[in-house]
Amino acid sequence: QVQLVESGGGLVQAGGSLRLSCAASGSGSSIATMGWYRQAPGKQRELAAIITSGGSTNYVDSVKGRFTISRDYAKNTVYLQMNSLKPEDTALYYCNVVVQVGALKYSYWGQGTQVTVSS
Image 1 (tube, rainbow, N blue to C red):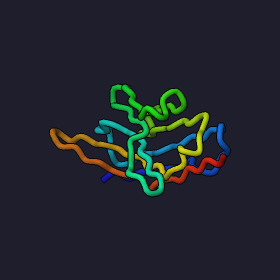
Image 2 (cartoon, one colour; image 1 turned 180 degrees about the vertical axis):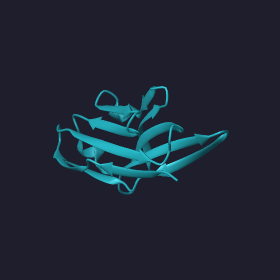
Image 3 (cartoon, rainbow, N blue to C red; image 1 turned 30 degrees about the vertical axis):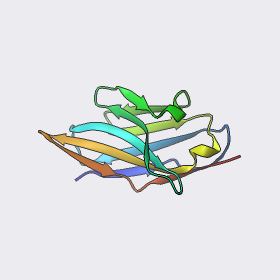
């Protein structure tokens, strides 16, 4: 069983920055991907950024050039540095970890951290 602890959300003015963190415990070395999803009120949850075990990254178009995802392999922690924040980035941000055990993959979610960007 994997436990995820998120931190770093908050209220910031447009143009500001925030850094989200998500620490995973109980997974050992079997983490395949770590990512951040977000869900704004009235909208579906979407992938914001993801990083693989090999370090490859992918971002939703709306955050490219502003957000950077990184990973500390020793600490099993994923970070999301968010710069030049816009009001439309306001959402509940969820950490997601996919663990691979043999041919099976297991997905785990954090409790969510609120990011609010004021105009």
